Length: 345
Image 1 (tube, rainbow, N blue to C red):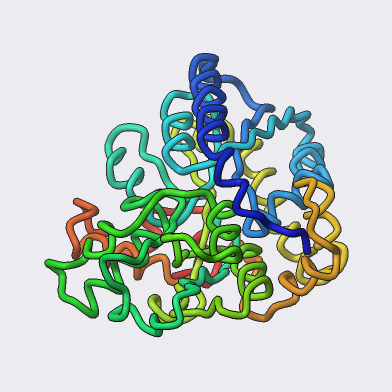
Image 2: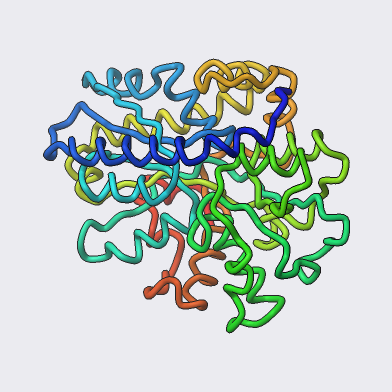
C-alpha cells in the first residue's frame, strides 16, 4: 500500500484547475449526433469502476459489436465529479457517463420530457464508509460544529445525499442538511491523506473503496461510524452509467453491444477476481499492490454487478426530502429497458 501524505492537499488547487480546464475543453469540442458505430464513455477513478476497466481492457464493446456485424469506435474519457459529467452529457460531448445514484436521479428528474436521461446499468453494490479519526465520535450525534466531513461534492454528491437521508431519519426532515454546514468538498485521495496524518480540522471522511481501506489500515485511530449499506438497509448500488434517450434510440446496435459488454465484464470479474485486481492496476495505472487490490475485490461486501440494488430507496427518500420533483413509480422508470430483465430494485 503506498504511503499517503498530507502534502497532497497543497496540490488540490492545481488539480481542480486542471480538471476545470479539461472539462471546459471537452465541452468546447462537443460533436453533433453521430451514426451507429461510435460511443464516448466517461468514468471516474477508483475500484468502483472495475467493470468499465475490464470492458476497456478486453475490448468487449468491440467484440459484441462485431458479433452484430458492426465496427465500433470506443472513446474513453476520465473526468472527476458528477457535475462535469452531467454538463458534458447534456452538451453532447459524451454519450455515456458515470456517477453515483443521486446525481443520476437528479439529472433524470430535471430532463424528463427533454433529453430524458436514464440509467444504463449499475456498476456494482459497494458500500461507502463514514470514517473518523476523532476518538470522541462514535455516532452521527457525536459530530459537532468543530468537526469537518470531507466529501467529493459537498451537499449534492453521492456521499452528501446519502448522509442527508440518514440525517433526516435521526434528526427529522427539516434538519436533513444539518451536516452540510461542516462538510467540505475534497477528493478522496487528499481526504484519506488528511485522516491518516491526523492533526488537522479535517477529521471525518465519507469514503469509497479503496480509500477507506487505506485509512483504516494507515492509522489505528481511524474507525467507522456507519456505512451506506446501514443507511440504505443492505447492499445497494453505488455508481451507475447513464445516457440520453437520443443516444439509446438512435444507436440500437452500439447500445446493445455496450450493455452486453458490461454483463460479460461483471461475470468475468466474479470468476477471475485475482486477474480483475491486476486489470484495475494496469488500466488505472494504480500504485496499489496486487494483494491489497485483490483483498478489496474479494471482500464479500463488494459485488461488481450491473443489476441495480436499492436505487428505489434513493428515489423515494430524495423525493420525500424535496430534492427530486418527480416521484418514480418504480426503479424501471429511470433505467432503460435493457436493464429491466434483471432482478433489480
